[in-house]
Length: 287
Length: 176
Image (cartoon, rainbow over all chains, first blue to last red; front, side, top):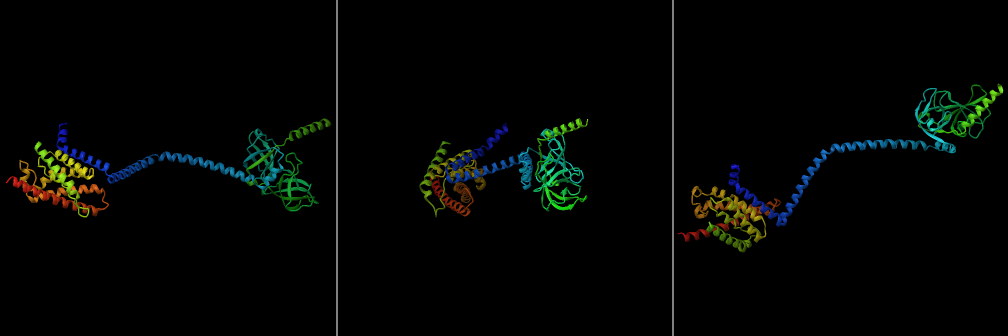
């Protein structure tokens, strides 16, 4: 303490000097425009510089937060992109010319839209699984159509999924006719390329030309008449020699099948009950 | 004590009047205005309290600033000179002068001319440099700054030496 007071006593003129100089400088800056402005601008410059350092430092420390926010936003945007891409794909599918024709043909029917969840084309017995089942109103033996035309028939209906027997299954047999003519036959597939199937039992005297449209006949209750199936690409004799076998270029691309619709058949219960009645009538007659 | 104080006050008034009425109007091509006030600070004998010299320096400078409308500049530069005054005196004065217990007032008579001239010149240089640096407040125009400092130092030095000559003659007449 003594030392401190001695120190102050010995060097008090320095403190006084600093004080007086400070007073002079204050007077200088306060009452002289030029020096005042120089001081003001350089002080502002210094303050701005220090603020910039502070801002840079804070920005660096906040980078972690910013990074997290950016990652979250990035993830959100990527999800959005995926959704939009899917929507765009669906849009593309539904804009095909065939699709519009099919839609028009089916305008009077109730359709259940469905997505293909599983599909195969390489085997002889190919099946398509769609994501709609009994809970959505899908029953067995309902027709399934896609953007390109007829796809197949519901073979088994689960609670939420259904198994579809497509044209490209050797067990498939769909009654078809030639557009503009009344000749009808059975569309069958014998394996191999999924682009082509064969229409059998066309009489030899039918006037057929390559490029003619093959459509559903409506004789089975599964499909309404006039649904596009494919076009004739080749005309040949059937192995039995009594009829013609037409090679049909299928409208549906089974290798690229995603959105389909199940045609709800309101008459089916009625037809089924008639069949049951018929059977019981026949058994009654026989018995 | 009061006597020396009043004497200094008298000197202050005389120097200030001379400065304001005469020397502020002296200039060569706009440069080289003599500043006398530093003379008052130079006349403090060794052993005077440093704080007292500083206060005198500041007060003198402030008074001059008020008359020349340069607030702070002269006050700052004269306070700087007041800080170094005892050291300059010890540096330039002869051993006899420094060790003299009577602590005589610095003058050409008590110090002899050559040390006194050196003492005055360095003090005036410090004063002028501080003043013009504060006035320019930048090194933007160093040549003009140099001319200002050089001319001011030279003129102030000459005027102060002339006054010292007058004072020496006066004291000689008074105390033969």
